[in-house]
Image 1 (cartoon, helix red, strand yellow):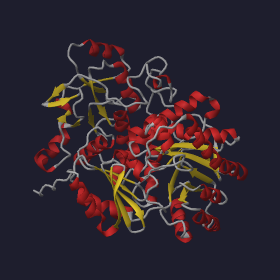
Image 2: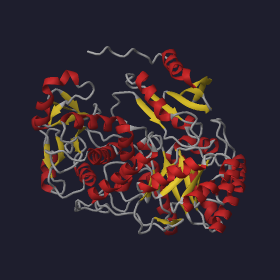
Image 3: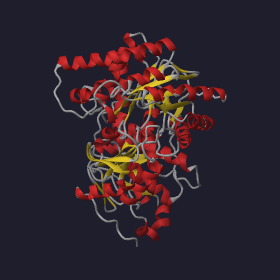
Image 4: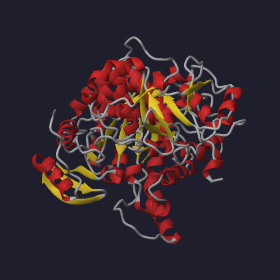
Length: 596
């Protein structure tokens, strides 16, 4: 048994129960406790332009944003937060403001005078971030911790004095060299980085703070949040601080929405999360309806029913803290290999297959592979032990799914199936248990529900095939299926992009640049490209990327291979072409196929 298997992040993995937390007060908004899940966003305007920031904040508040974050890169820039705050209050808007701080403790000390909350990143608030590789002695490690504490305590004291809140916000892409070299670029390193700051806050009797554990990879993000909550539970009941959820650098369009739903929706479904931000490379106002719809879809999904089992009476089939795909026997289903480590297959219904059969050659990467009615899949109620007994007694491995029409939450139902089913049997995941949709529903809600339910299970290693039934349109249901597999990292069929949302630190137009890069590189199947507005999280979040395009200075771009910057200060108008050249230099380029 691993050390992590002894930790518990959720009281019951088969029934929904929201995590109980203390209340953190941000201006007039309470986070945690009995408060609703709060929705927030971040300004993309330059903090030095008070009028633009005020206007954008008013627009966000008008569509339901409850907390607004704004970057404060330096102490001088942070001074302008006073004018932004005063302008908002003069306009009759009392939405709380949050100052986003990286690298500059003096900027935090100025910002805390004017805003209701300060976000600090433990990875770069006082620590070094140079990707240096060294072995730290205990004395050297303690010396850097002491320096970090000396820098952080004054802010804690000011927050306590002025009644300000704080988010201790760890990012996978910006762990300090000290943490990286002692704990690794891992969820464990993320948690330890945050807990260091929390211990200092608590030692100074300051408790009006919450945590976040953001990453661009949903698997890493989910594991980090679970590990954090498990450690908080282990530390004791008074470590019940609220949680801010987000997938950083999620991107835009369907991809950004799906990746966000997988990470955020998975945790919300387990009762974790008190405030969320959906980070899209789009205008900030577009983030709010997505966040609201995500919260709504999860609430509706977890209220469907109960599984009739408890986590205390039934083990789980996976380690919640370390990804490993569930091992099964490999099956042949209508000529397609399923399970046993084979590529996760995409199913569709007979009706949808018939609707697209005449144009299969035109569907590109979104082709259906198996018709569910022809697959021989066994559909059962996972609560019925007799049905499970017969399956597990069978000589041959089977493809199994959860029966439609059951009053069960989808995620919990498939967890129950995986726990009771012999590992040799493969599992077909569904986006819902309502059966196939025959009328058009709200596409955004369908997309988010499918991504939450299927993506969450895939990130736990459960699932050998998927089917999206909640979307009535055949082509759209197939596209959703494949995009979920891509976002969950289990089937890469196209170029993968890590693109941050814009903010006041951004050094170029992220939306237009991202689209320009997509148009030039969108045919490079399996290549991962990061598009980052600045260096705050850029190099770190590119840990899994092959190539990176990062703002280095106004109008200038730095290009990366992995974490290493290899070309500097390239004029923005030349940078996409130079990125293509870099991909060619490393043998990852191929020409796009000619259109039929």
